[in-house]
Image 1 (cartoon, helix red, strand yellow):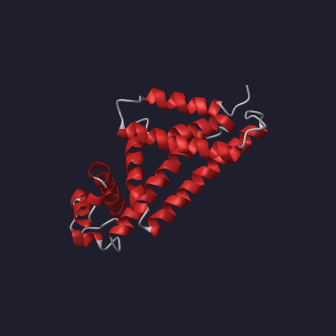
Image 2 (cartoon, rainbow, N blue to C red; image 1 turned 45 degrees about the vertical axis):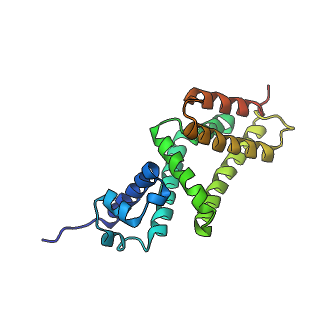
Image 3 (tube, rainbow, N blue to C red; image 1 turned 135 degrees about the horizontal axis):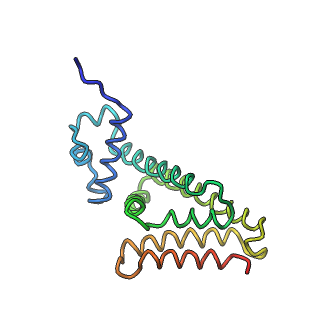
Length: 197
């Protein structure tokens, strides 16, 4: 009797393997051969599920973003305003093993996105969703009287997102310089800077 293959599960296995290779060895090392080996498959099997390496990489990035969105939705729940904003921003920092891997994966794609318009479009779309969420929560917080009326919410949004990127990079590149508590404190201080007294 022939073995029944769950194609969706096989695709997920390949994407998980691709993410592991990227996080561990870097995006340049994520060849189809390395990904196939990590997944315990032959190179030829990958071609049944993905057209090429770029499709695997794009799919791995999208899958990571999908998991992050699901986790954020569960964390934020019924929260609104600044409480929800804190959860969203802290969740985007590498404060545990899972988020550190996600951040390493994301950062690995940044340089490649500079030379691949397709990857850049995915990055821009995802960054646009996060920006809209942060801006929307600031608007909601202002309506609830939690944010100063004179605060420029566009500037506040850019400031907070730049802080997420900067703190994330600093923790990855200079692990002895910052602790998780430092990231939480710095992000909290930035949010409080827009809050009403």
